[in-house]
Image (cartoon, rainbow, N blue to C red):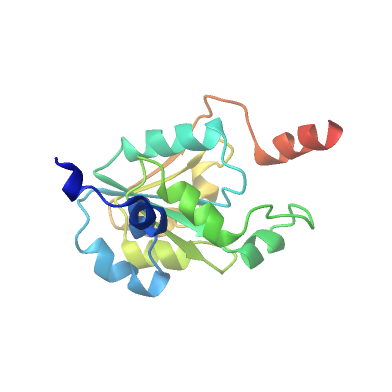
Length: 173
């Protein structure tokens, strides 16, 4: 590559990073999923402060299929979960960008409802995954995915980390 084909520093500084293209509005999800390889793995969460437990689970989930779709709770949805008045710490656009930047993630979207059921119905994943603190029978979408012949898995935690515990540790400092 010659110097003449490299972007100028100003152009590089103003260009959106490539990972931003992985962020998909819910109403555009069907069109984007048409081009995604199957089997599709789906997971969801707040991903407020991303830690080793999150990235490990996402890498494990991705290994279960050809593509991984992550649905992130909207700010209002996080607040309704009762995790604390200060949550989420990071706003939805920032949480989406961090998740999209991960190599294991194919696409990332969001949901404003209390559960991701509508996104699950929208994408019809072959594999539905949550972390080990979720019994399979309590995972939202279990019945719908299983009824279509899909698998629902609760992956054991390899790292005992949580955003709540991390925030408590920060407050003690």
